[in-house]
Length: 290
Image 1 (tube, one colour):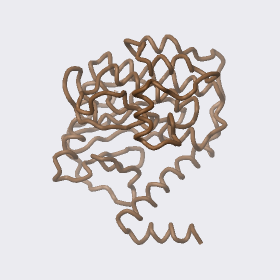
Image 2 (cartoon, rainbow, N blue to C red):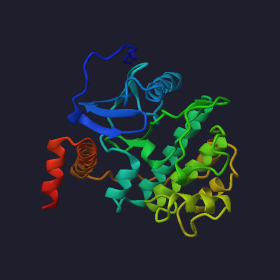
Image 3 (cartoon, rainbow, N blue to C red):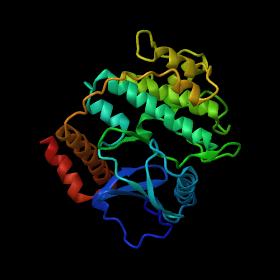
């Protein structure tokens, strides 16, 4: 078993390897490694977000449904590269994914949350985009920047379509994580976020009135509704309600998986170029429009 390293990386990632940009961290692909570093090295929020992420990965240790952390320090986290990107983008780019895979994704995502909770950790930002898919389409939970230990207040983020209506300053809890998990299961089964067509403020008003998207006839619809109505006390209870067919399901061909990864990477590069005015990527965008 490889030993996780706890040392500052010596090399600075090439901006052309950027594949993700969040509120606290930049994400780079370095071969088979994904490196996350503070988006602003002198900003306390960015530094604290990456530091917390490293701390949580150390606490969780290794688990089949958690992305593997290879190296970490107070200013970086190195993770195993997930060949098929995140679950949100995968489902959008592969709308014809066999139904058996949706159930597998749902079950494994829920198992990941159950494990995290069993270790006394609240994720705080559960959504389909926080689950990665490796080469074999195994689900791996990531994105612990906003995580906290039970009973403490972590960095707060309000993702309206996954946010249990409550005081904005209230800490994340198991209850709020399970509500967000229900929204994630809806994403997995429906291929889009709850109320994707509505603005954020309308979504929150509907949630406050306990008016949720119609799940009649949707796979795991009753499970999703029970998550939204806060009827579960643990993620382990949800795991018991998701039954995956015993027969194996074929994995989509490798070329399709490669196309998905390229689309995701190109999207980020174009976004990065347009946001910061990098001439190489901006030019690519202009050429794509001609």
